[in-house]
Image (cartoon, rainbow, N blue to C red; front, side, top):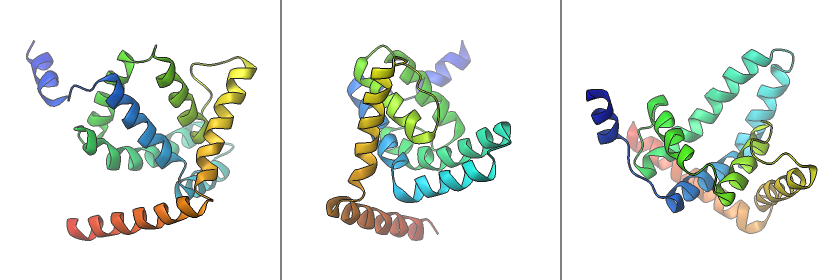
Length: 159
């Protein structure tokens, strides 16, 4: 009972709308050019070692999660990731949640979780590719440059 009370105290309550915002922010971060470059390097270096690839990819994903989670009230830790995933389970039947989840998985090179028909997979790929292409637009490049500057400033403040 004590463990349940402790978990309830530290885990923020998030609505479906907030969960969708969090998930979309993670997706957008997974689509960032630098993240995609790092993911490609990891995939190439570990292509014949699936277990190691899974671990190294999870570490890279955690870097994004640790940066995004505090904005939504979660700890920037593995515990915070677990808490987020617990809340995500509540919304796994929401169609928009499923679509964004599959977009994240596509960007991470993980098989689709919810939609398995070829038509649904193609729609997911199309949406995820649109997010990737946005970073090649002038608006996307400007936003990304500002985002990197902002992260650098935050990093300096922490030191």
